Amino acid sequence: MSRWEKNLFELLRRTSTDLPTDVELALRRALQAEKRGSHAAWALESILDSVRLSREKDVPLCEDTGTLQFYFSVPVGFDTNALAARTQSVVAKATRHGYLRQNTLDAVSGATFVTNVAHSAPVMFFQQGARKTVDVRLIMKSAASENEGRQYALPDSELKADRSLAGARRCILDAIWRAQGNPCSPGVLGICIGGDRATGYAQSKVQYLRRVGSRSPVKALARLEQQILKDARKLGIGPMGLGGGTTLLGVCIDSLSRLPSSYFVTVSFMGWMFRRRGALLGPTGGVERWLY
Image 1 (cartoon, rainbow, N blue to C red):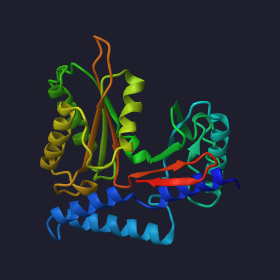
Image 2 (image 1 turned 90 degrees about the vertical axis):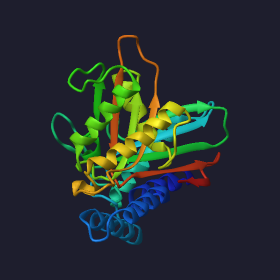
Image 3 (image 1 turned 180 degrees about the vertical axis):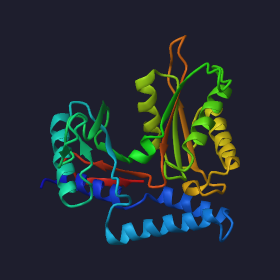
Image 4 (image 1 turned 30 degrees about the vertical axis):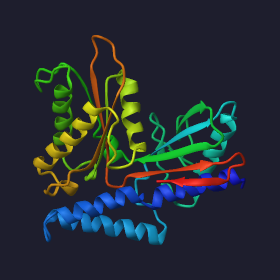
């Protein structure tokens, strides 16, 4: 195995089995905020126990190891075809070693791709720029969270939501209420305002590359992030839908340009098993720094 493959494999292993520090700290703060002995506190204690056991026993945080989304930022002229082939090889090896479930199915026949390598699986995004290292980040997104994603086209008469941030807020709160505890709450919302139907979903998921608790550099969006967190606490959904104040650990909102007659609000969910890791790899594939 090359150095590239060795470190890509380690990235995948860490993502599958070891919850990032920022997410775990957010869960611990949430536990302190809930009433001792409540259903919410019990759920959070159970979640944190699962986090500990997965790390100690080197096993996946969740049996649904999800859709793999790799985000690569590479130097100009870098051989992305070779990097894609190495990534596919590593995904197949991680599946054989049990860090990934055989989780990829043919949509027509239902047959299983036993290596988790298929058309558009794993998902890979590449961006070239003026840099010397390869920045690779991996998100593992389960079906429980993916199934609850929603997209709204404004204006929406039923929600009384116009084409404004106030209208977007109505949509986001509707998505949270409809989802209840199904996305394995508490988790993080990734939201995109604007774009088209495809780019809205893609950009909403890019928000999971941000650290939990970070704020948008756009002041109006930062205010909306904070407002949604406050609003969500009042809904009483709580961890795993058992009640309490901690329905969300974070809200990350971005915006894209839009057409005059389109105004989309796209909401993606990530559950408490917020599997996201990254690394900076040098010219020969060595790790210069682990991210998150």
